[in-house]
Each structure stands twice: as C-alpha cells, then as structure tokens.
Amino acid sequence: MTKYLPLFLLLFIFSCKDASKTEEARTPVSQSETVVEEDDLSAISTKDFREFKVLDSKVITKAEIWSTINLQMTDFTEADYNRLKSLILESDISALHNQIREGKFNYEQLTKFYLFRIRKYDRENDLSLNSVISINPNVINQAKEADGTEFEEGMHAIFGMPILLKDNVNADGMVTTAGATALLNNKTGDAFLVKQLKSKGALILGKANLSEWAYFFCGDCPSGYSAVGGQTLNPYGRRIIDTGGSSSGSGVSVSANFAAAAIGSETSGSILSPASSNSAVGLKPTIGLVSRTGVVPISSTLDTAGPITRTVMDNAILLDAIFGPDIADSKTIDALLDNGFYYDNLKESSVNGKRFGAPKRLLEDSLYIKALNVLKSQGAVIVEVEEEQLGLPNFLRLLNLDMKKDLPLYMEGYANSDIKMRTIEDFMAFNLQDSLTSMPYGQNLFKGIADDTGDAKFLARIQDTLKTNGRQYFDKPMQAQNLDGFLSINNYHAGFAAVAEYPALTVPMGYQDNGKPMGLTFISSRLRERQLLEWAYVYEQASKARVAPKDYN
Image (tube, rainbow, N blue to C red; front, side, top):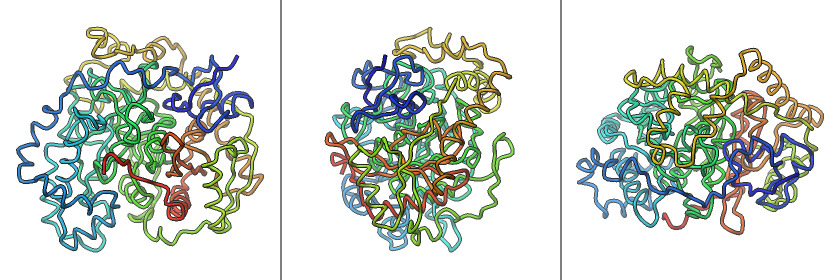
C-alpha cells in the first residue's frame, strides 16, 4: 500500500526518500507531491506542518534576546535603518564591501542594520519568523574593530560580514542549544569552522533557530520547531509554506535579509531543504571538507556544515572561509587550496559543452523544464537518464547508531562541563521532567536511538552498503553517459548524495502557484564544489529566478 504525502512533509532526508524504494515509489504525481510507502521509516514525519502545537518559544522572549544589545543600539534609529535599507537589502557581499569603501556606511552600521531588522521582524509581531535564537553580545564591538582595520589587498572577502550560525555550532560567548532546553546552559568555545571564520575577519552575528537536535529528535513535529526557538516560519508564506529543515532558521534568516549569510549543517537534506524552501543558495560539501568538531552531531559518517546565502558568489565566499583540515575530525580533508579558490574568477564560469543528467521522472515539473532550458541556452547538454534501482537500506539505523556514540563524545569534548548529561537516555529523562516545554511533540526518534541494539560490526556493514549504493546511484549514469553533473530538485536526491559523501548545491529556480520556492540542485562527485559553484553561477545569472519575500522589504 502506498500513501501520498506532500513533499514539504518529508523532513530532514525525507524529500528524497522516495528514491530508496520501488520505481513506482519514485514517480512524482505532481509538482508538489511524491509517493512514499507507508512503512518507509525514512519518511519520519507524516504530520501536516500547519498543525502547530507551539508557535512562540516558551523558553526565551524577545526582551531576553535583546537585553544585552538594546543599550548598544540606542544611536541607530528608524531613520538610519530606512536610509540604509535600499543599500543593504539583497546586496551581495561584494556590493556591501564596495559601498563600505565608498563611505556609504561602515561595518558597525551594517551590523546594526541587520540587528535592527531582526529585532523589528523576527519575534512577537504579525510578521514574526522566529528564525534567530540568540545574538552575539560582542558583535557590535567586534564590528567597530573591523572599522579600525583597513581592508587591504589579500584580505578575505568574508571580512567584516555579519554571519549567523545554526544553533548546533559552538561559538564563544554564546550558548549552543541545538534547540533543546537540556542545553540552555551549554556555553562553549568556538567550533573549528568558527575559528576559521574569525581568522578571516567575519563577524558572528548570532545563532539561528533549527529543527531541534537537527530534526533527529521528535519525529512527529514540524520542520523548524525547537523548544528553545519556537516554530520557524517561512517568509514566503507564514504558516502556509514549510520552512524545510533542519537548518530552518539559517535558510529563513538569509532569505529575509537578517544577515549577510548563514551557516547550516546537513546530515541528509538539512541544508538543501531549507535553502530551496526559502529561495536561497545552499551547498552541502563533500564530507570532511568542512570541519565538524564543535558541532552537535547526528552522524560522524554523514554530518557536515555548509553555507546558505542569497547568491552563488556569496556561497563560494563563505565556503572558502570555512573549509580546511582539522586533525580532530576523523574525516577531514586537506584540499591543499589557497584562500580565494572557490570565488576567484567565478564570474568567468561557463557551462558550454557540460553534460548534465536529468532524471526522466522529474521532467513533468514545469519549473525544472524551464531551468533545463536556461542551461541549454548557455550551451549545456541535457541528457535524460533513468535512475539506478538502488535503495538505502538501514539508513535510519545508521543515524541511530552514530548518534548513540557521537553525542556522548560531543558532550565530553566540546560541551559545557557543568552539564552532566551524556547519553540519549540522559536527555530523554531530562525532557520528561517538563514534557510540555521540552518535548510537546514527543521524542520518538530519541526512543528509536535508545532502543537500537546494533553493534559496531553492524554499523560498519550499513556504512559500506550505503556508501556503495550512493556512489553507484550517481556514478553509473555519469560514467555511461559521460556526464559532468546530475540535476535534481530541492533535496529530492539528498539521501543518495549524503551516503555517497558527494557535494550538492541548490539554487533558486522559481516559485509554484502557491508561492512556494523551488530550487535546482546540482550534484557531482567528490571535491567538485568549485564546479558546482561555477555551474550554479551561470544558471543563476541567466535565470535571475530569486525574488525577495515581499512582506519583508
């Protein structure tokens, strides 16, 4: 028996989960639906995303978020905000730097503009999005320091740019909650990737909301919900259009122009989903290119952090700022690349003669067809392909067994030592003390982790099978048809890209009739991020598909 579920319900890895079953289960029935077998555990949430039990956080208030910042904002008025709005909204990083060099504003004013905007729109009003959990209390002083540093040739393009971090990424001076009340006091040092950002002069603006524990917690909750941050809402349709998950706040905040850019994280679909759902650019790197140490984990096999931005060029700049070898990360990759590799000369990109595989089942989607025609107009060759008949067996078990061992390692090595909880069972017991606040949608996925008795040998077999299947899924058609890349929609193929450990990048390709944003997703083989960025840049410049959410202009 099959069950038809709206695509926006398939959270975390779920939009691509139809790909793990039969050919019938891989056939979309419309632009907004996919077929998923009723017993497919990868489609963990089957709850209509509009059935919210909670909207605003019961844990934090707007007043608390801004208590340390308001006094630092007294010299920035509504008039200042309105003066800068036309200069900053939708401006990319290069344009922001140019305007700063021209004296139109400085880094402090840029930072205060974003802070003013978050305070104005994000919480406790008719347009609230609940996309930001906390603000760095030191960011204004750090912006002033940036203004005291002359921007020189050779400095990284990320310098002085206010960046939001998904709130599972450790950052000095702030707590890292993963959206969970159990981690409300988890004050930490900087994750490796945050050190990378700071070493190049980026400003950490604050933390973005997320699907709690990167969505591997409740199973019956909407994407974008966390006990700490409340329910993240989509600026293209509050309470109408899903945010995607689990980097929901990162995707929403970027699209709503609350920061220059944001960091998300992905295990399978958690960057691609919110980026595409919020008309942003999201890149899931090759596993190991970006450090995972100091990031609250799900799976040391599949986890990665990555950039979410409004433009492809900004995505390249942010990726360039965070990649690098980290000896504490078991999967680290030393790419031996210099700063600037991902964004230098990106404007000279071409897709002329590049061959892209287009799954035949996606050719019923009119936005996808339009996107293919844009690529064809730029000289690309589109090859229709049949997808490999491969599944993703025991995918959920992989996540269970990884998180069971990886979370205690994070708690021991990177969390606040005052927090004594270590295991999944510890956190489950904590949540039961005040279930209405800590787990209004339950904690079924945590129960699944606790109950999973698989051993290390079983985990190794799962890892081997999934990696083999994931790579064959892409490699066979790419080799047979001499393809450069694979073209998907949103996070439809995120599961296969995840287990293959291949990079994937989504870029806005338009909007459905109800206003729901959709993304064209480029996938290729290991360490081909530069090529993905080049192809996406050409498509972005030719299509000009992104439109800012109108209520937030």
